[in-house]
Length: 126
Image 1 (cartoon, one colour):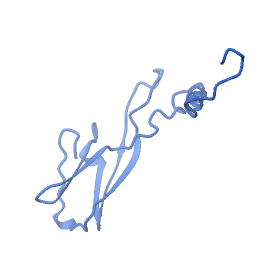
Image 2 (cartoon, rainbow, N blue to C red; image 1 turned 60 degrees about the vertical axis):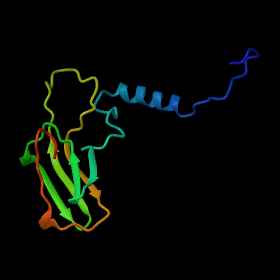
Image 3 (cartoon, rainbow, N blue to C red; image 1 turned 180 degrees about the horizontal axis):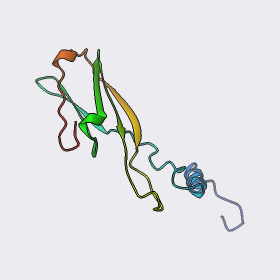
Image 4 (cartoon, helix red, strand yellow; image 1 turned 45 degrees about the vertical axis):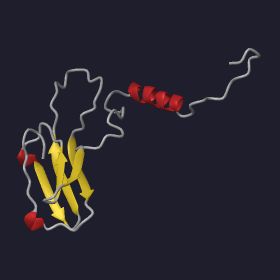
């Protein structure tokens, strides 16, 4: 407020609204609060090498049986199910590790030959 009692304009509109929204959602418990908002799972990097393209995806804690990789035309799609166990009687305060079914598609700038595609899963990285 200025000395005469008038208010300055909010120099960062929207920040206060986001904070208020998060506080409101927190009242309904951690399952309602979007701790994972804005996150994409799995995180991927795409490289072009002399041999072709390499897509690396971080999938910690998943078993290879829980993953499906599909190669079609110019797109690679990763699908699976991620379960994260925790003590149900515990009070959950923050949830940033997404769980449940997921699907992530990445387009490449070329058409792909599915017969030449290879997948290796090691130490949580595909």
